[in-house]
Length: 213
Image 1 (cartoon, helix red, strand yellow):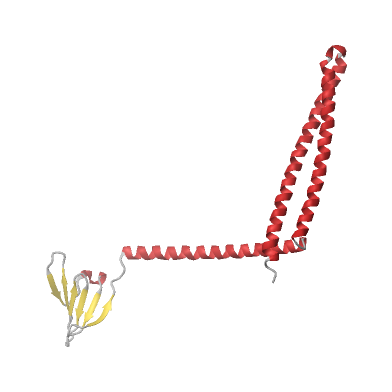
Image 2 (cartoon, rainbow, N blue to C red):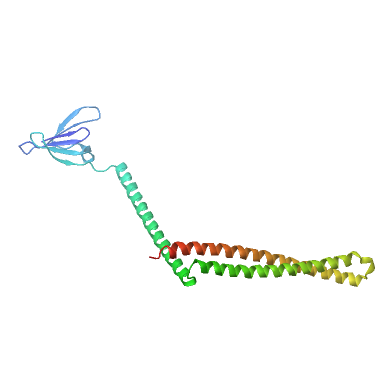
């Protein structure tokens, strides 16, 4: 039986029960022995019969680099599997959110026209409130100008009256600023109503109307 290690080990099995190993060392010298070379356990082993035909191949055991690559491959597979699970969970969550949104819209509206009608009613209320606030602001501004005119004629009023004018002026300014803040908020509410209605109409079309058989 003959074995060749160049860089693999070949084991030749002759008719008699003898095993001869043949390998070449790093210096290029050919060796024969009845025992495998020290490095045989780390190489591929090919077993031949007495006529030189291959009977069996024992793969070389994995090297440290092979084990590292295998570990990296397993880690990539684990990460890919984890990513697939996350994507699947996200798709399920998105589907559940769409179903919940569709139920909400069906419970709130019969059709898209109803969304528009509700939007228009809410906008009309905001517009009315805003108009009343602007009128109140105009009244306050007129009163402020009147007080300012009286303060400019300070030579004709006593000190106590001037102090009262200052207090009234400060109060009017504060009330005007509150009206401005209120008006800003009403304009924000107006924009929010518009945006919410647009979103409801779009979602109703996609999730309710188009989903109906």
